[in-house]
Image (cartoon, rainbow, N blue to C red; front, side, top):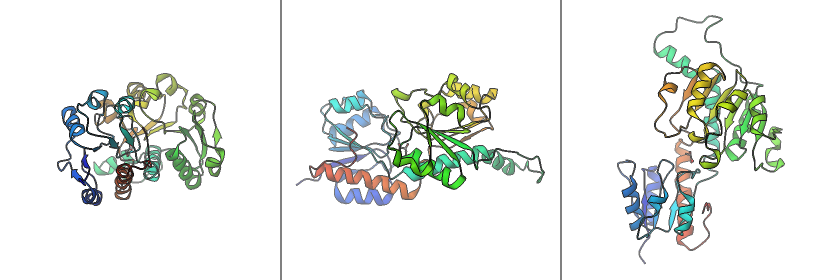
Length: 323
Ligand code: DGY
């Protein structure tokens, strides 16, 4: 029997590409260049499975490719707001993602940003590298204490819960959260959180606000000028979720006018483009979407895609069905 034809849109960790190649007839992306609409459509016409990732745009136009050979989109990543799910459904495609395996590393990046912004680590590093440092003194680069402060989480899924665990048990932080679909009480009982009734309640009470909700239409610019005004003046905003959850322009105004103290961002609306104003600000820490970027996690994500493909081509229910 012929092996299924699988196309991978970006370069994957070597061991995962080797494993994939041993099982299927595979087209890898050896240059790691992003694929355009026409290339993605051609991939859908000529392969049984296409494995995109969070930086590909699987719009209704792309998924409208005719004739469609592809039957499964095995997404490398947990987020799927880059895939038009209605269009995928209409085309009879199965869509899978890679939950769980990236939880800890993404929560670690939220904590990295929290610590870096609070303790002015990016600014301090630039200070040393530019040889501006003239030595220790009692009033030099005074920052904000993290231990014992209040962390407010918008969204209380796996990544938020892992961040809460690290913040509470590692830094003695008090935990607040708001989630329209809250987890069962026992899933969060180890961090003794306060469950808030609204986003606004979290924003008013928290010293640090960390975003953990999905991107896309439902949460577009959830954090806007009005909501930023509710935050404490010395509060810090952390975003490891999706860039479009925050209105960049409102955030820039809030940072500039002192409405909030600082922000730590791993994701951006329209990334890899980052607003010029943010690039010039000392009170923001900017990372290039590094949440899951550890060797261990990226290999695990790839292997999770393989597991879903294996089940699909064996005619069994996939493990991580999105559609
Ligand atoms: C995801 O998986 O959705 C992240 O944003 C990339 O790891």
